Image (cartoon, rainbow, N blue to C red; front, side, top):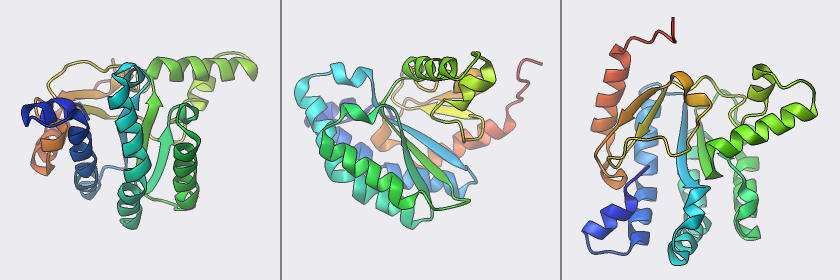
Amino acid sequence: MDGNGRWATRRLLPRTAGHRAGVKNIVPVVTAAFDRGVSVVTLYAFSTENKGRAKDEVDGLIDLIRKQMRPMTRDLIARGSRVGFIGDIEYFPNDVQNILCEIAAENSHIENAQIVNIALNYGGREEIARAARLASESGEVTRARIERYLYTADMPPLDMIIRTGGEKRLSNFLLYQAAYAELFFSDTLWPDFNENELTGILDEFAHRQRRFGK
């Protein structure tokens, strides 16, 4: 969900205002995806590298999680979705960790639901290293065992990645899972990304030939 800061800067607003606008756009876009049959959506909300940004911006992002995560996920859960978190959340202050754990626990019982994963303090390289370490502790390191310890172990294969904001790279997002995912790059800044553009991307995805190397 790239482009929040630039969205705010172009409007002569603080970058935190862009992040707030980005949060407001999550429910409409995720709902539109689910309405079109998508079963799992994973949102890259806070990367391991984001911690290196200016302190006031990082503090603002953490405060946004603290204040907006419950209302935002409440809307998604009310629509019958199951919300979970991937990444190392122990980085966050205790009160934020408690909020995330409570949200995950409160809706973990929902079965056969469309799933929203929110990636917080997440990095693809770190996920692979973690999975390999856990795999080695339980025996021989194999592809199957590594996949068992990925954050997405219980999820279906990743079909597509959409990155907004004009940059054309994965930026450490779902690196293992993305091996044969279809990639889409939009110039639209995340707060302006909407249902119409999502529909166009899903239509293009439906017409791509996927050979998986065969």
